[in-house]
Image 1 (tube, rainbow, N blue to C red):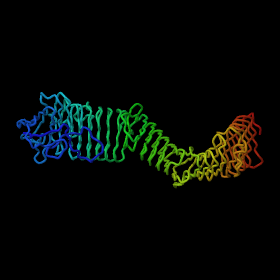
Image 2 (tube, rainbow, N blue to C red):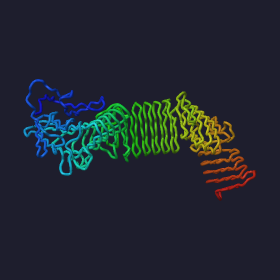
Image 3 (cartoon, helix red, strand yellow):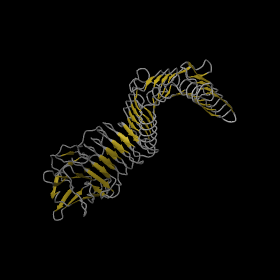
Image 4 (cartoon, one colour):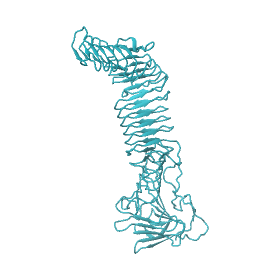
Length: 613
């Protein structure tokens, strides 16, 4: 006979995992009355026996358990001899080995809320076979619950519309009918749970589920309903599946896998450790704005999905499309994945990886580590000193953009933490190719790669290094720049200009716009090429092999003593090759091609008949 117990209104099973500061509502499983467990107290005064009863028929091996109104039946296995226990008392002579089937029903007169707990802490029982299920739970009217407690080993549970499998074989082990609430409280070990059916349990479960992980690295997947999933201790993977789910990582480093398509408005709460919400399987664009608080509504995920990436989340991973991810005030880990992503870290020491695609990355305040990955990436550095950032470009032509700055910058692509303004201490690695300066007087030094060094406003000093470098000069006079090409074939690009230019590649500060007092750029003698704009430009080359492109306007181009290529473009141009083996192409308009008095071969491409030789 089951001894008298006082069962409090809320029966609580002691959680067997690590402690967590997250409240776990609904994890009330009932317990051994001999244990010091909240919710159950053994009374010394005599009481009437509980109405819940168990009858075992040895001839058939059937244990029949009837649950009375508003009562809890905790069914378990005794560790010492394998006896079948109900509320910690033996079910007559039943053992889990001798019991072929367990039939659980409620009192026909019961209209309250009954709960059945299958406690596998001391081992499994009631396994099904090809012939029959091992456990049948059939309750009735009222709000009834079926709860499962895992073992200390590696458990695997499958919940489907037709039942429960807890051995990962082809047969369902239990059927559960007329039950409104499911709770699975897993034990220690690396556990697996899914409510999406299979393994003999049919299609996905039709009810919402509460799942509580414990110690171990668990993989937990909810149902199509509105589930609550708790990871517990360990590095867990949580999936809500369909429905508006609440997912709690709790202790350690957890991953919230949002799978390949929108699956409801989910809420993510991290806990301790580094926790990541992953949209890596998505093929449509996702937009995520991380938050330090959890709200009842969110706008993260795909358009209209309504996820809430809330408190305790450190990382977000994008999918295959063009994603937008904004970090919170902490130390964030953002991964764009494939696609042309826009990633912003915000405050904190962030780690951001663009992945494949042409990404735009802004670290924000803090000492950030920023990696572009494959593609032509841009790193935006904002308007003020925002921390000592490290930039890794990856494959492609990558740019660090300081265009919002007004203070003077010193930047060198030498892999040393000596870049930025003042003592900012940025570090542009060797796989950064391009730099954009601000409105101050900047000093920018390139590397052996083909660099694009754009000083923008101010009196800048730009040095290209060993590669084939380009120095854009913008649409208007932007300061008195000094340009050193270095080795390689280097180009100063004035192609956006509309006013007349006067340029001579002689290392003198007499280059650029002729308006007013003149721009007075100083283009060094180690620069080979000039691209002009739409004004009437005058350009004189040097002893190197120059390419001078006049573009639009009535230009006068002189090559100097190298093997030069002079391109008149639109307009009535005058081209003088000078010494060397030159190529003269007048382009549109009435052009004058002057072979000069020097020696060497001249290749002429006149615009006949409007060309004078």
